[in-house]
Image (spheres, rainbow, N blue to C red):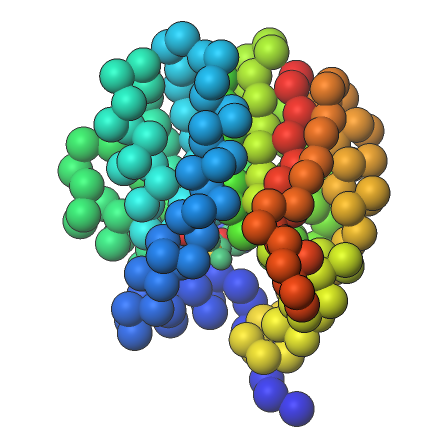
Length: 205
Ligand SMILES: C[S@@+](CC[C@H](N)C(=O)[O-])C[C@H]1O[C@@H](n2cnc3c(N)ncnc32)[C@H](O)[C@@H]1O
């Protein structure tokens, strides 16, 4: 059996080989749909990307005229170093998501393909509701690794990652509700034969 490494170690290695750039290509469709949904009723908004990788989503969102501020946070040193090099204008922070609190609360927290890298994702959902979001602020997350997407079950072994928490759609929704989110919704985007789609889960504080 392959030795498994911590998620942030694996993603730092991805930067060394340029594999981080493939995530922009693979996640773009789902991310664009998530952002379109989450920003459609916002006037001016402050934004955080939780687990921003090399920061490509922060750079996209910051282009919107109604975006007041855009922050990316990631636990991989190499991802944050790359994000800062590519973009001196926005803020990128190297920290574990559970250990960080923004100075000012924000209107929208977005995250793509990150929450299942935590042993207890419900802690992060509550942490964001308690400390990151302003009243009526929204959390929206995208996940490809979940119980109903059977093809994803082999990824921890395939990628050699030590923590990948496999949960059904109902548990993700329940964690949002327990954390205090209202108007909790989920849907699967782009499902086709052998692929259950990207699971999107969202709720409002
Ligand atoms: C699959 S990548 C997704 C990156 C980015 N969201 C994208 O779509 O390109 C997962 C990211 O989550 C970060 N990550 C995983 N666990 C983390 C944690 N506990 N704290 C901070 N970042 C974490 C990794 O370093 C990695 O950059």
